[in-house]
Amino acid sequence: MKISAPQLIHDAQAQLGEGPVWDAARNCLWWVDILTGRLHRYLPETGQDNFIELGQPLGCAAACRSGKFILGMKNGLAILRQAPDDALGLDTVQLDWVAQPELHLPENRFNDGKCGPDGRFLAGTMDMKEKDPSGALYSVSPDGSLKTLKTGVRISNGLTWSADYKTFYYIDTPTREIVAYDYDLTCGEIANPRVAVRIPDGLGWPDGMTSDLEGRLWVAMWGGAAITVWDAAKGELLEKINFPAKNITSCAFGGSQQDTLYVTSARIGLDAADLAAFPASGGLFRVQTAVQGQPTFVFQD
Image 1: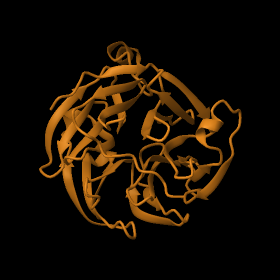
Image 2: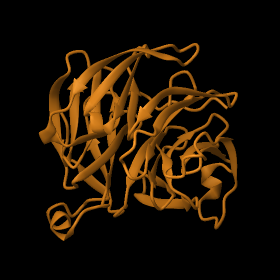
Image 3: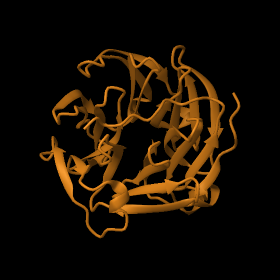
Image 4: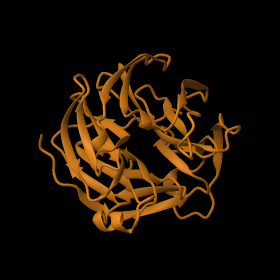
């Protein structure tokens, strides 16, 4: 497979960079720095990156049909009242809460999330101490109704769909597994879980994930300094792309041809030796591929 070497496009030094989302309508990339509560916008044409501060941990974000954004935050799921372009540079932003299912769990927060091909927003939670299986995976419908898809989760992470949208793939990081589910586009239910990929110990921990239109899963490896590419049908490792950042957190396809892979990373927990060995940790990267990634879906509000 033809894949370029990773290019550091923004030395953000993010504490916990995550959640890249390509925005075809605005021709830009959105991504988050979870612990600082920042929603970043990166403009590929100029290399400019700026951000909105939301005042609490921000796990994930996705564009809405209306031009607004839906957010997975410390205190729940919310709609950013302004269009994110308009909110850039503001000292305060206004949120409309959609659901706050875990206010009774003060040690939990939302982590990874993504819009599906059916216009729903799926997002999961985790124990911030990464010990208790108190997390869950939720689905929000365009009418604002909330559904719990899965409970007993430790670190809810990567999620993506197959090219025909009939299969949903999901990662609970400590399991080292990518689990496939049947996905019902009509009601948004998941069923029939089975292990699609088992990640060997030496590769790191599976984090964020995306997919391409030929059935491959592209998985960020926390602690593994790499993106791994898997045959979803066979569970086989096809490629390993090495990065100058130890904790690779997530990835998303974007660009005019949907063939550019944008990759986030983190600096949190790294000591001086780690940072010397992986100086670009916390940076935003770009990898040029010869495959077409799955499009980014929007929340149908």
